[in-house]
Length: 366
Image 1: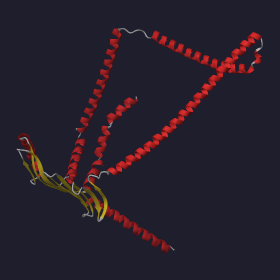
Image 2: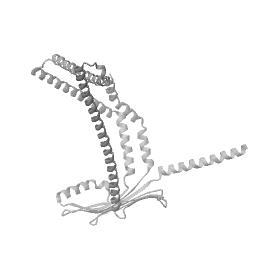
Image 3: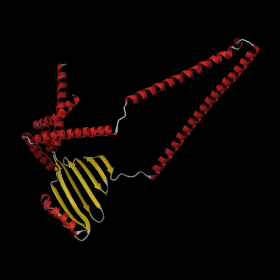
Image 4: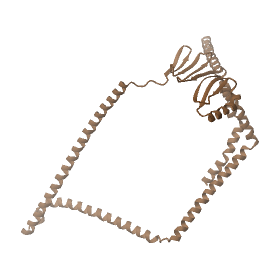
């Protein structure tokens, strides 16, 4: 039994080691195998053409883009196509648009029909409620008329009021409603009188301000705003002077020099290694063409001898061909980024730069 368990554990360990070795090999390939790229194109009377190629791991992973012919962006791994799209994408046919618009119109009609049916039902219910209210009002009017007639008859004949108990009950209900209405009216009138008293008291407390007093108030407001603006400018100037002194410190200068050096290495790793171009250009104006050609002559030592530019001082033209290639190594980028991010001088610089902010926040809290 023990031998079987040990054998299973040994197999599991071997599989785990193989997986770890495969992950390590893949990581090393990603870091140390460069990604090569090449971009070429041409501009002539027929139009503009460009082609781009990206390859990694001896062409096992590759990306290709051509525009305008055949106009595709394709990504492949070995012989399998992972992604393919047309540039520019195909437009939707008109027939599909018509069908979609027809379906949308049909749905809109159905929705409008349902909404109209709902509105008709709502109007019917509202009309029924109004009819019931009218019936109730007419019934109350008839009861009040009967009550007045009965009172007149009782006054003539001298009959007691107990002979009409139903009408009296109805009158008591109406009387309660009337009392409630009178109570609401009294409450509203009391609120209005209280509001009037408050406004009168405020008006009595507020004394009329003369014109010189108003002018003095405005002058004081202007002085307050100017003083607040001056305080803000002083704080900003103090902060600027603090940051300038911080940048002039020895540790900060050393760190910025190191950042400049490492950024140059990263940029050199990304920039193309080979550039070839033959360009013929002209602006239609001899003076501007000469200015541009002079600017190119100033930059041409940095571009190399394979970039040829021919000026045309007679007409406006821009034609030519170019071919750019280079490679990018991931380990160079990651190494320099990690060295800059993990530098102790960067943490010290950030800590010092936060001091004015902390002081401002402490003053606000107080």
